[in-house]
Length: 343
Image (cartoon, rainbow, N blue to C red; front, side, top):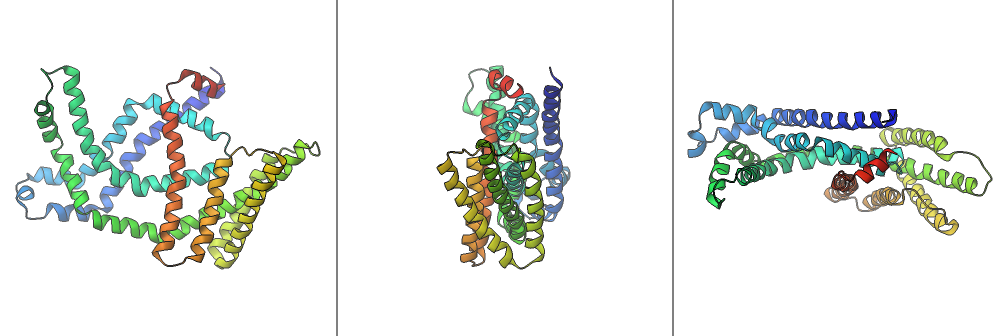
């Protein structure tokens, strides 16, 4: 095994280890900031809550969320650690043709969607369903008589009681929690979108320069490797545009956005005319969509409508990242693909 393969394997294993540590820490923090709502739920004077032992209430308030909400993610990661690491390998191979700025663009959006939407709202349901599935698989594995509905369902119902309580607490306060998270999202969506917009404009302008340099290389007029120059230029442009967004009037960044949209369209047309392919056409399409949506939201400024448009694009671009991971996971046991990714 080469040093490169060993380094690649080490990085992928470290990503899996980071995943194992980060998810429980995330839910521990989530539990801390939501503790007042949990206490309020278990202070209600209902028959079920009133008769709960004190240790159960204490456990639900302080430990249930970090343990049970992270349990399905941690369990899957432990059971499928090698396959997940190999999925990262294939994913890295697929992203190898996408420039680093675009990887950052989609990665940031995917991370934000994961933290604010998927993890908090999917985990309670996944945990409870996971208990029933695990009990069914266990009884099926040990072949306890002829497995029937009641043989596995009653034990599953009992085992799901404690995680089920915290799930009920979560979803009974769903509206309050969603309002809190959405307000967090709403107050930060402009900043997040602005950072993404600055990056999208920098990508578009840098890509157009790369196109001109690539055309020069193809026509034997230049021996310049475009990527070494364009990477640095994109970073410089990104920092400039980010500063403009944060500290200058929005008219300037919106004007630059229109210019970037024209440049993106021009590059698309010229590449078709010159038959010079793009190595990341799908990614460039999403970046162009990001620019177009910003232009559209500026024309439709009406409070929540603008926020919805921006949030929609952030979620949409992140779904591309998640879809790539699921496809990579699907083929992570294909030795031919894995050997090809390491060659």
